[in-house]
Image 1 (tube, one colour):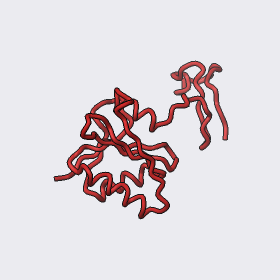
Image 2 (cartoon, rainbow, N blue to C red; image 1 turned 60 degrees about the horizontal axis):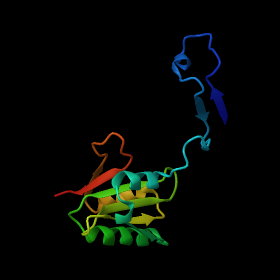
Image 3 (cartoon, rainbow, N blue to C red; image 1 turned 180 degrees about the vertical axis):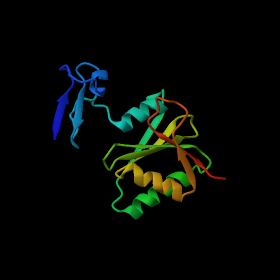
Image 4 (cartoon, rainbow, N blue to C red; image 1 turned 120 degrees about the vertical axis):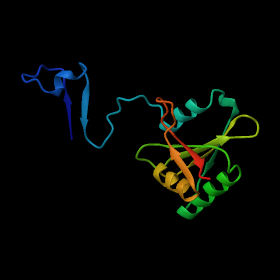
Length: 146
């Protein structure tokens, strides 16, 4: 593991000359802790809902893959024609799936499973998931394949 600061002047004209002064390059699999403390899931919830009071989040603590798949399937089957938003914490077993509800708000299911597993489960349920048109968005939108 090593951290390399590009503050010093390099004698050659490498790509390090194009770096922002004070930029730190990480060469480790452990986070440096330099990023803001906001989680990916909370960032997504802020992106998809202007009114946090119209947002309902239920936590699902499934004990097995089968329980997780059943919870997601039941959640999706309640509103099969809706568009779903999925996201998760990077490198962690935390993900979320959200959709619009009848009251004009958002209903979400927070899971203790990796977002890749959630993505695969949506594909199994015949949903196509892709990044939205919004370039600032950090989540996937999933639509039923018809």
